[in-house]
Image (cartoon, rainbow, N blue to C red):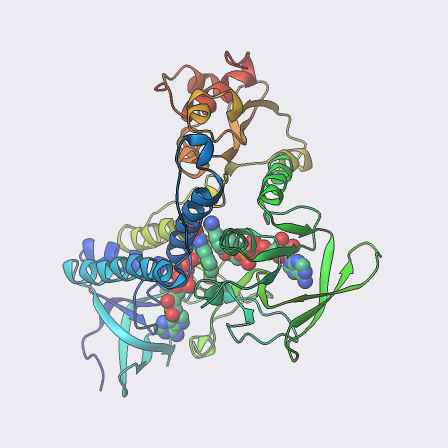
Length: 471
Ligand code: FAD
Ligand code: NAD
């Protein structure tokens, strides 16, 4: 069978990149079909990424806080018990509500949802192995590749999602492991490590580099984050590389080498989380049938308008260049549809925020100190600690600071780095400022409500060109 009518646009992948593009295309009046094999829309982010991880982060934080941070607030609690099954149920309710919401939006915007696995038959035709059995094919004037990414495996350690796990396994363990080792101290390692540490596991993070947080995190902020996470009970082995692993015994064994010629060591764990990055996913997509190329890291090669070598086939999201972030995929989705429909579109890649949803949160946008130094760009720094912010004080949640980097001559904001409560929400203000080319004085002369955490943001801005009032 085949979907006889030619579509204006066929999208392969119904993750954030694909589903946002489908809705936008529907809104623009394009005849659009979206092929997704997972059985649910929303991709990694909604099903096994952003959403379930934030549900577990939020509820494990609440549990941890009730256990360790109530007495000094005048709250006496009785017997506190973890019901992991119900915590997982709460996570599943959030996920299914959101993924079903996208199905509704597809209907509302006239998007045809094809449940199956797509692969190129030729430049204009996508063959689909339907989830319910059988096959169909769709042809499109335009085709959009949005097949996302998958966890990078660690050689010699096979994922069983029970003892050797990716983030997906870490989102649905059936019991709290006694000892968990996390390979990789990037965002996934620290977020999922935090969840299981709060729920009672002894967590050790082994990181190859000398700092945690993955690419982009400012070194000073990263150091503070490490100190605070250590205080919460997470152990770190930095500058340490996992060389090999063996999961054949009762415990999983890892051989680690200190990166700079230190002594090799064996560490053991009930559960090992491999969080060493993600890689583009194009398996079975038949790119060769459309004459398309990937680079040495498996990313689909595109130009600045998201066009592959075949100009009617575009590609966005995790499967191509740039940071693997849901909001980046979403921006590209809108821009790609605008290119198709109107011939122009735009994403400002210099202004994409990053957030690590640990407690405290870490968030940043723009450039960090090291990046500015590497490019010989002069800068001035303004900081403000949450310990001097009235709202943080009333909340008894004062760890962290706001740090701003600005051009010493023009005062234009170059980057903002926050570690502290609600950093992930506060970074939106810095993002807007950066997008509009604001100076730190523009920010500091903008009235901020009192008492709010955002006043720390205003005062850090003030500190770059003058002095903060409260510190
Ligand atoms: P994906 O979401 O991976 O979607 C691709 C979809 O394509 C998948 O559903 C897949 O089944 C489908 N597909 C693939 N091949 C085919 C085919 N041949 N036929 C049909 N369908 C196919 N980002 C953030 O910004 N904030 C966060 O808090 C955050 N948390 C995360 C937490 C975790 C644990 C993980 C793993 C990731 C997280 N991310 C987060 C990253 C975010 O999930 C990704 O950047 C985002 O999902 C990328 O969207 P995408 O549409 O490009 O790819
Ligand atoms: P990452 O690139 O952030 O971190 C991987 C870390 O593993 C790096 O610090 C690297 O030095 C280390 N590493 C690699 N090999 C190692 C080895 N052999 N031994 C020890 N350490 C090793 O990748 P990730 O944490 O897996 O996350 C993948 C992607 O998912 C990222 O692009 C991230 O942006 C995205 N994500 C985002 C969020 C968020 O926005 N809150 C949450 C989760 C995931």
